[in-house]
Image (cartoon, rainbow, N blue to C red):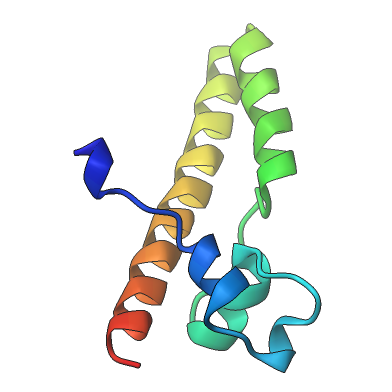
Length: 95
């Protein structure tokens, strides 16, 4: 299965450019242009750096209720990350 995985970032670095991406080819720069209906703005966890901090808090925390809440926030973030990759894949296939 690993052999079938590939990084979409390579496509945006080498083949698919849009001035609206600014100087970045990151998911957070590409997504609003490719799939504007998807947004991280409504989530508590909005980027990878914040996800790492929340993960650390969840792992090291002792309060079960807080850990559960942090886990739910991470799941929402990861769900959107995955959905974003799928939407970008569909767009690339249809371009």
